Image (cartoon, rainbow, N blue to C red; front, side):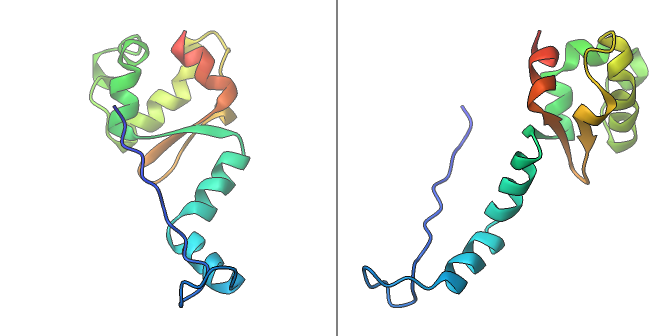
Length: 116
């Protein structure tokens, strides 16, 4: 049960119907993170999970790497992502899974392989 939020974008400061200020709308989209989310999604990364959630979701794959990788920290996440192509017999390329500062970004094509 993931939470989904609806972001309301105000078209103008007066909230008058039919009046649209593009600068104000772009500022709201930028500061709410929507522009960045669209950019990441446009690059093909359909899944964005914090390190811990990535470890929890793909624990069965991570356990194949040995007991030293079962606890996911940033350094461990990098090691796991580097080793996933070998564990999955090359089905997932190195460019399909990328580490951010706090999240693991997975391309849509790799999600199916990870979920198998």
